[in-house]
Image (cartoon, rainbow over all chains, first blue to last red; front, side):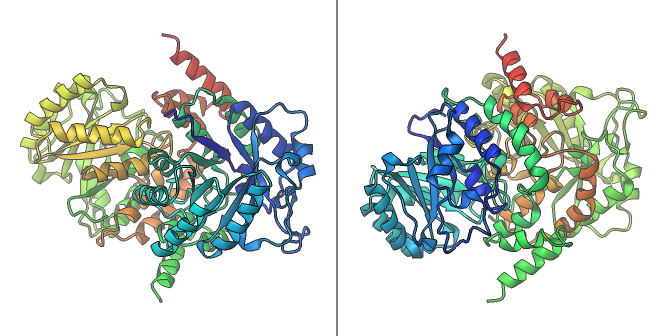
Length: 317
Length: 317
């Protein structure tokens, strides 16, 4: 599956940071950066650019803020063609500042948003575009949006400066037919100059296959992470995606090496992957938070009870 | 996704038995039987009917032979509409005997075969059909077969007594487009009176999505197993498939309960699921045996080295 326009973005540090409050060691981030650079992957997302007022530093690690200076410290001395991205939550924008792109270690700013916050997202995107950054808007929780609202948002985005618009399956609820439907809907409402991206969650072991489904329908920006790390069940595993893409510029060995050396030890400390509570929230199209909470309790493996609670709560409108 | 013709077959004991030489306790098999009966699943595969001459009982547990009397002992006293199946390897048929179906606890005999052994498979299928059993032929290693051989086999099967013909992705190598292609090819060469089945392996986290792909193209017999248990990476997880099918006759709670009570403890003793060595053999369209062997060694997590060895061996024709 070789298509030159396809770009792969690794979100290991950003989405993985949602499990450990963004406390990765500098060494870990540097080793991930090194491996991705060697592998020929296109983009690496270093974390969030969050407001220190809204998100106080006593509660979060370095990768919640991604100060330019910190990024330079990490990447210093490693040969690389990797582009760097940083994410901002549209509904949590406060005093975030960006220097002009040519003075920044970042190439791309990605704005995560719900449909309801689209105006804030577009304001930020246009500002970053004017500063010289590539930009994306990542529409979260898309499996809960009703179509007229989504179409209105897409029509607004069509008029904005954004380069890429992502389908984000926040709840890991989508099946292939729904991914096809959404990517085609995005394609229909966005001009050909804008690319479409997919960011899939692995609640139902569908993150990789849904990413393939996106590719088939001409999504060209693909998110993935090392060994699938990410909140709850995690994301599309980067190693699987590289195997499918078969782009001659990609090298798999550095990725497998950083998985064995860095991700396996990490998995002893923090949990992600296919677990029944996340399958249940995905199947019922719910946020994984109830699953994340129950995994911290003594009842963490009481799957049937958890299922019945969530199902019955859902049915009680 | 409700289609009345769809039948789900649980292969927990049969495919899972490939990891532990078929040494499941009677209690475990009984609890699985009870859960499947309560859940409304259509078929349960109890194991293999193997020749004791070719496969001596000192090397294997009960579920390698599945004697009729043993099956009656397990199911005795449990209310159930579950049909039972047993598998035979066409290339290992020796003195296997079947009593007439009405005197047997089994409803269905499934014959696993490579294309090259199709004549043996059909001989056995016709014999079992005449004894009153439902029958299937499961074409293994299909990702390595060349099309003229496969078409010849399908044309032979079209003339046989077989009820269901399965696409078996033994190496976990197929992507959705290839599943679509194969299911359509099977449909083209088999009369409408014969059903098509899919049995997918999870090397690349595609067993569930490839099963969905089969459903979309009118495969009506679907294999799955509890928590995905099976050799190497395992199979399509039954719990995920039930969530997708949304057939009102299915109950998920008994399945989640047997997973928490029986499968989680078992996973501490025997290994299955998404592991990088199986991803590598799947991606390279190879039998998982090299992965299974390396997982028994001290180098079991040396993924990059394993990848390079398999890849380079593959390139050395």
